[in-house]
Structures are given as C-alpha cells and as structure tokens.
Length: 330
Image (tube, rainbow, N blue to C red; front, side, top):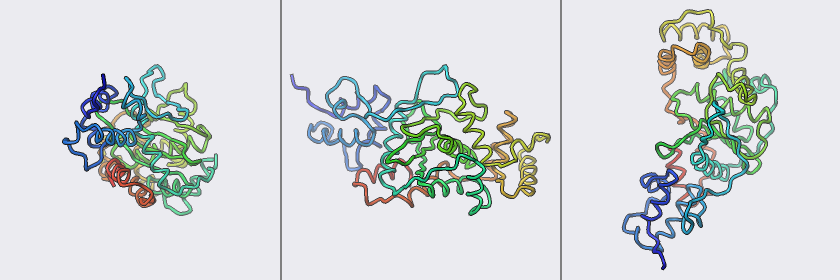
C-alpha cells in the first residue's frame, strides 16, 4: 500500500529527534509556506527538501526511512567538563554545522596560520587596539581568515554547547553559542577557541566544547591549555590581580578593576571583573551586576554584525538567505 506523503507525518518523525513542529515551521520551511500545502504530496516533497537542507538532515531518511539521519559530518571531538557524562549535543551540533557550512561558503576567508605563542598573538592585536576584548578579537580572527558566528537558535529542551570549531574549505569556522549576556564572557569563549586553533588541538573536522569553565577538567589537558591561553591573551600579566582585595559590592569591584586598568592600560576592565569571578568562585551576583553596568551589549549581537558585513549575500539562494537572516538575527 502506498503511503501518502503529508507534512503531519514529517512533523511526527521530526519530533522524535527533538525538532518540534513550531521549530520546523519557523526554521526549516520558507516564509511562503502555508498550511494549505500540508496535504499536497508534491508540495510536501518540496518542503521536505527545504527542511533537510536547512536543518542538516539526510533527505532520503526524512522521506522514506523509519529513523531520520543527519548528513554525514567530519570526525567530531566532544569536549566535556564532566567526562563521565556521555550525553552529547548531537542535534545542536548538526544544526550549528549547517550554519558553519553556509557562512564558510558565503565568505572569502583565507586562513593564515596562527603563532603558537600567546604573547605574540596578544602583541599583534595590541598593535591596532588598546585592549584585547571581544571587538579586537573579532577583528583579529577575521584578519586571519577565521569565520566567527554567534548561533543559538535551537529547539527547546535539547542539549546545547558553548562553542564549536569546524574546518570548512581549509579554513576554520568558530561558532559561539553560550547564552551568557556579556561581551567579556563571549570574549573568553572566543579566546578559548582561538587557543585550540593556535595550539594545534584541531587540524581537521569538528571540536565541540560542551561547556567552557575556568576550573577545567584536569583529565583534559587541551581544555586546561585553552583556558590558560585565553587568560593570558585577555589579561597579559594581570591574572588574579584582585586576589588580595576584600570586595563586597559590584561598584567596589568596578572601582578596583578600574584601578588595575589604570596601571595596565592594555587590559580591559570587563576581563578583570570576569577573572575575579572565575577565581573567587563566589559573589557571582555582584560580578554579573558589575558586568551589566559596564556592558549592555545584546548577546551575540556584535559577533553577527561583523559576520553580516563580511558575507557575500549574493551567493545564497532566496531560501538560504532568508534562513541565515532569521537564525543569525541580522
């Protein structure tokens, strides 16, 4: 018996892997789709093509197989803070990998190998900028042919990740995905991923940092090295420079951080504040208040502003253009 292809049957299959109907309609289907097409097999076949393309799914498995498969991906390393947890963010990685592919295709990035010495990278950045912060890191990455994207458009209740590196067309794409609201934290995550690249932790394929925390998993030397690299890149010699201060209020924290920056003008005050929070492992309430007072930047906004200016939008068909606009918020 021939089974008629309907959109409801596709929604049912997709929901089994965590892609609910609302997410698929808003991200997998083009804007011109309407529910009158849901029971028209030829239209549904075309819609399935868009869903598979945008959401990185194998089209044949979506249409005729019992279980949906993602498109094949390069070798992938998942980095976990808790190595005993084997629940990896496969769906989030697949969605982000498609965004990495599209953005790599839409840019003229020519990767230049990075120095392995973090001091050299810091010196290179400071030749054109006062401090090493999110903005100067973004400009440095793009100057080296490293595409940087902020992507956090995932279905609810799926396991997510903090950041990802994916090699594409002989150049790396870094995707930042944490929901932290402040540029100082995104700067640390970006510096961490830059450390992975500079130190040769990933020369092909994909690396997924499921969490980025200062107290890294001591069984994962790569993560500890990347954290040390990020700290030195952002702070120079000012790591844990507030260790002797007794601080009880966010305004007091800002004042002490600003005093450090007066003595070390190439260090960003936001990074001093975040570094204090890393080391004390407490008082996060007023650390966050301090960061909010210093920086009201919307999460990921600056990252994708840089990306949007560097994408060749004419390379994309209408549906891919619309999809990237939507998921990147540009």
